[in-house]
Amino acid sequence: MKITFYGQNCLGLKIEEIDVLVDPFITGNDLSKDKINIKDLKADYILLTHAHQDHTLDAEEIAENTGAVIVANFEIANHYEEKGLEVHPMNHGGSWDFEFGNVKYVNAIHTSSFPDGKYGGQPGGFVIEGEHKNIYIAGDTALTMDMKLIPMTTKLDLAVLPVGDNFTMGVNDAIVASDFVECDKILGCHYDTFGYIEIDHEEAKKKFYEKGKDLMLLDIGESIEL
Image (cartoon, rainbow, N blue to C red; front, side, top):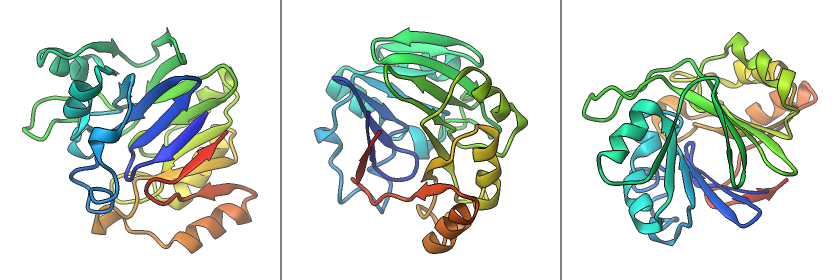
């Protein structure tokens, strides 16, 4: 599994020969808009954790460009289906076997609405069990005890956790979250994009390191392989 960071919560996952894009927010992100051309992105599926603009802004255009299936909660899926796009609706606790692996939609504590105020359903995260590697994409969330349910059924190889604070967990709570999901390899997201969520990278990495954990804060366009 190859994972590429496109800023904020946007990730590209290459699982076998399938391209999965998560929470595409690029053209409105000052940190990524001059580095990433959304017309060059490949996507067979687009996973959306919730409806906020910094997670959905480029979903429609990319889906139109690529023919990707949008996977999201019921309300978000309906929103895009009304626009003529192919969707797969999900809801909390449900899972589905896609061609790239099993996807489960799990709880997140946050809010969810489209930029025009339209209801965006309840926010969530995704647990993806691929053929060889398993990852948890938390989406925007507070620390929640529900995270303890994940390792009861899935042994994770990577957890993607927000670390920017203010709107989501900060670094300290993300460390606790990594304990809850029993995964010491963390990819940070939801940081630096806005003034409210700027973080000290070295301090954040040090805090994780002192707990025996590895926090990765990737540059825009940088990739890792699991």
